[in-house]
Length: 376
Image (cartoon, rainbow, N blue to C red):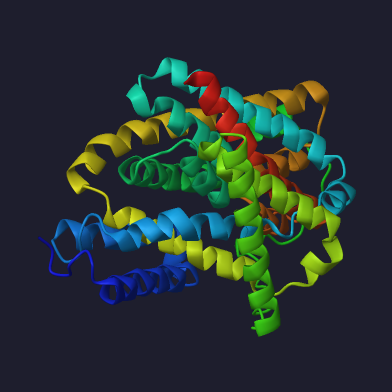
């Protein structure tokens, strides 16, 4: 029995939003540069449930995972204009595709090297999608492959530490003399190296017409996708149908979607609520027993990815700056890629890096689900 009963919707809702608020607050503080807010969302809610303050399971958590997660996917992908992505990404896009294949190779090779048990194919798919796209893909794939809350919490926590390790490696590689000789760069990095700080976007203005319109569109997409999945008897892949319909809308009305404000931020809020709910449903003892194993698997994927990317860059005579930006777009996402490119003086690669990262969001879910199906 927990201090807060499982049927107390308002008290549990207060907990979910308070922990999500804490995670967002940490993300914008110096502490967030070292430990992602996602880790805190999982950790704090796990502490609350394992100390008996909140329950391990509740209809409130089920609502967040079953209804709010699908609703978040369109909100996070409505800016996925493929024409703009390919137009502004240049030659970096070609190497981003190679970097994505390196992630797939790392996930498959690591799967056969390590014995991950029954969870193996699911984790392989989730990690593949996450290190081609980002958190939105991790969330979508976990739903499509029917991960339990316990499995998802362990996999996500382990991958967060791996992602931070990948970021440090990406920053360090351009300064390693041996690698610079093997994969030279002509990019101008003589500029003063700046601290890695993602560019601060203008705070989004809250327009009720934009927010209500984005929510209405997301509901419509989810309803249509669910109907299509049921008609085709593929209900477990309804997230994929949601992704396809969202990308179709984003490319049919790119101007309208680009003008929406607050849609992505609202999607992030729903996603963080899900992370909190997942942490609340996680047994700490099982978590500790499993997380290290998945951390090792994740690091194996990253190392194989980087080795293959650098080897391909050397063979194809690709500039190291372009290779690192393409790899960053896959492993750590568009915002951090822009920060890396800026800090190294590769300002001409900022826009291509961002565009490749957004493209990763578009394709990551499909590739991750395919990897799970292939290894399952």
